[in-house]
Image (tube, rainbow, N blue to C red; front, side):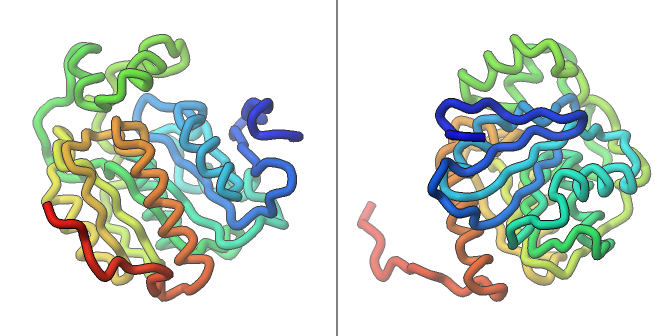
Length: 255
């Protein structure tokens, strides 16, 4: 790839990749696991934005029903043997559950330094998911650009938010890695308190709430703020595994 501004995602059979622009040394590697109904190119906007800041991003075309061994194999293939560290798994919805399980497995073929779980699918009984397309869009995102992208996407599988979480993702997974749990305060599928409980169960997790955020927090109306916070977290991770702050605000502006 020659230039981020002129290059589309490099597609293989299992992944889409965004590289930093020429002259920018890679600062880390991210592997994105999509959620129900999604595929890797749903995260093109996120991949391009993180690549601008020096991170190599691989978005996989894995699905919710894939065996964890197959998801692991796809991630290992996408990352390759010479990945720039730190290597971080990013998962949305059921992809977040996959990321948690893979990180807990600690397979040496995928030397993970951390995970990001966004809009994690609930493993507890919930009401039925959206029954029609407009309702599903309203549950997923308030971003008009992303709503149009999903509406025009022939490869996106509508109605999958109603699909149950596969049994192999139901057991609790508690990886002992730095984790960033991101969740929308207005997520209609996974209640905020369940996401907060997930963060409290993980020994090294930070919890971020997207005010008025819906289910697809990586592609919601606040996607710029979300991506910026991810970059700040990644910069702390690559500098210090204990995630000590690089910059703190001594004084917040008065409301």
